[in-house]
Length: 403
Image 1 (cartoon, rainbow, N blue to C red):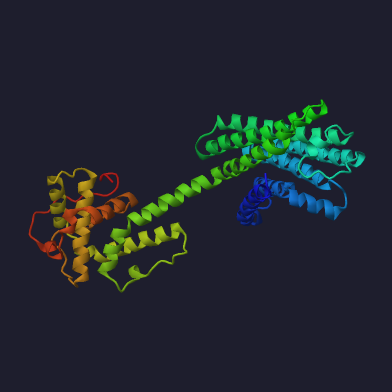
Image 2: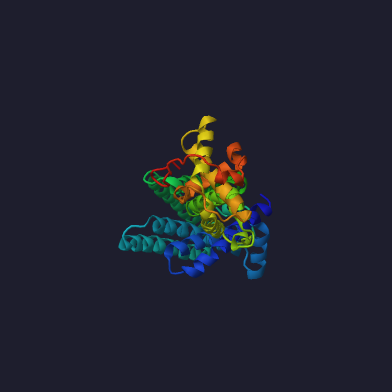
């Protein structure tokens, strides 16, 4: 792996950390939020400090050969502990149980970090090794034990996290379950990383050369694990939000024809005021729905149930039945009223149609679609609002009307 294979995942993780910073500022007391941010930030640091150019810079700055290897081991051990704590807080439970388990894991990995520092201080690693420190010093006194301890700590975290995510995924559904399955894949890849390194170290201690497992294959598995970890942690948080935003934007677009029809009835009112492009999708939809209701109030005196009945009958004659015919009838009535209002007509229709005006979003969307796609509605003219025809029974909106 070249330097970019380390720096690109580091940059991706730190970008995610920057995105999460506002949440950390707002809820820095929340252990779950803190754990997510620590996992992302420390994961990025692990890739950054494991890059060969960074290793050389740290060694030169410290004046201690291979000091960067100790730093990387500490960072990866901290990352393992942070992931365990994140899963514990994420899954939840009684506060006493969460605190007890968290303290145990935190204490255990703190002792591992302390042992790594002591073993490095007791050992002797005078030759700088930027990419194969694990295998080169696998048999060195104390340094070899330090390498084994770091790998076993990482394997333990990977195995425990995989099992916890697996069991939890069998108990939940939806976005959380999808995120947990993805995390399982990510941690299995992390487990492969440490297993390959451990195999290479064990082989070196027994006199065999399996260095390629540590220097070539294991970094590949670690890099592969990164996107799975990012997606797995963020999917349960981002997924529901993305679905809500998508549905909001879809409703906003679908209501466009009805909005345009009513806005055209009175172009000098607030209905014609554009919505700022940078407003949230929810604000856009709320403004559009409020404008539609204002527009319906504006054209209400011109609503004629005779127009609705004739258009609905025409739609049914053309083979459109059920909700589609109802929406076409309402759309025709609203279009005729909007045209009459735009032309300045003030005489109230013979048979008021305001009781057939939809209020629910689903009904409004149906009317909006009919305005755009129905030839019956397209043929409506304002003059039809006063055509003498028998009135049809008003259709109630809501549960009595299919929407």
